[in-house]
Length: 339
Image (cartoon, rainbow, N blue to C red):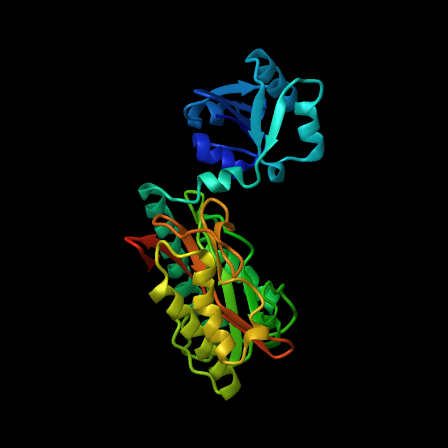
């Protein structure tokens, strides 16, 4: 198959290296990694199974390679390309450029045994970071606003530069937690506040993703067994936890993704919180923080062994509070195993 890639993680998956200015072309058994002279040494040392081509004009060089090899058809993912970049490659050539959405994500949906080990390590490092974060917040977090707590979370999660983060962490207090993708505010953490933290780090480029919601007292830990002083919050929390645990216990290889989604959604809806469950049950995790499979009520993707995805039901009551509990699972021997 002939295809060309522009996304960094898609390129990395193919040849073990990528950078912020590269283009990858696979033509049958031959492959080309095109980049500029800033990356010559790294590319020569790290690129596997591809010829390293150094040229400041990536698109022009790519076009020359396609012409030289007399290529008639090549696959690309429109999501990876800018309009101007694609036009530079495709103009004035008699080549059929075949769009295929999520081309690389489809290739990466089943993780190899080695990938499963790496992503499991990322998840374990993320869980360890959450333990350190709980201690720091208990000791020094009260009276600090979400901006400060988010800054602290970045340092602890990344082990102060050792790891990069999967995404900017979410640290949300009380009513701000009702926004699934909350951004920091000046709200300060006080004793017995509801605190939601959603964060992850990367290990060997593979992401982790985890969410915990707690009552921030003097002894809190980021575990799933939480007690709240407000009965309304406790009822919602217990519902989310039941949905979370049900999906992990009952997900099976061979199910459609929408069936896994229903394992959380049915419980939330029966408890009367259906209108407050505003997102899908989960998403795949790998080199990208969001990739296939998507665990949604519309997805007909068949769940298979080797897939890695999140289980993250939530309840979000506007202007009051939000609750989400998230873990990553891998499908192993037909069942969901928490990483």
